[in-house]
Length: 148
Image 1 (cartoon, rainbow, N blue to C red):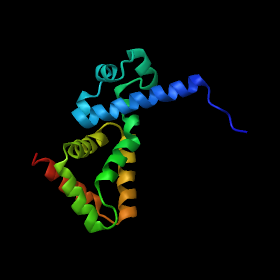
Image 2: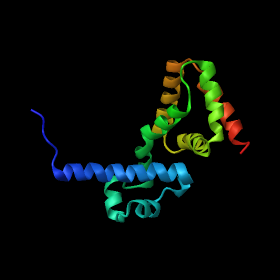
Image 3: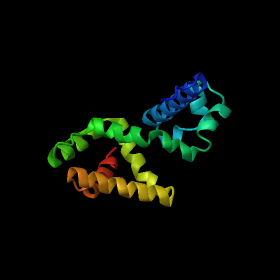
């Protein structure tokens, strides 16, 4: 027997989705430094308290785009071969949002030991699944960011 969600549960899920979407969109459009409670209040028209129920600190904002950043990158690159991945990755640098995502990835590991560990694990998983030397590609990405 499956339980049906109550109106309150559905409303809470929608509120969480709306705030998460605002976090991701603010980040992609304006950068991590612009993601704050004031920006979220402006975008969602919700109170500070409502937002803080779902995201009590700015560090928890990162939870909103755990999958969103990965999905955004995946839409920009071709994972069918190492050569296609490398070419599509570098071509994606023409998109300011892609550059924003990559620049953010370079800043994330410095936040906490847990984030460092997760980041390294994801890089290793991507290397294993694609056969691409992600460390080399990220190094090239860092140099590419310096051009902008």
